Image (cartoon, rainbow, N blue to C red):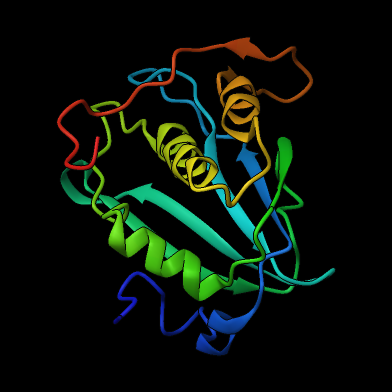
Length: 172
């Protein structure tokens, strides 16, 4: 496996063998633009120790194509996150197992909507597939969908928002 989505500068390949203890999903506040609807940017942290993780960030790049980046972190979730939820891992699989899973399911091949939305749906899809393979506790996909279905703004009540995705995605 070449793990081309693992940044050679930001990802320590020695972490591929670390067992994932928990998955922390974080919503970042997003700069709102009048031309696009208000949305959060969502990322996952694959926590492998009390103080360390691998950040999984699917973000839009040129022409709406998703760019997946895995990077090693000395923290387990983002301080600047406006909302966070955690998922317990049933089978203690490794960061390498997760990278293989992303590659095998072609989850690194993703296209965002014209409004550059899609990271919420991408994260839900990853959780849904992992849950179906009994890697996560039962009900994880449903609880993730419930949290991901909202827009979180600073000091405001969460607002229910449709989760948009590009219907032409290859792995749908």
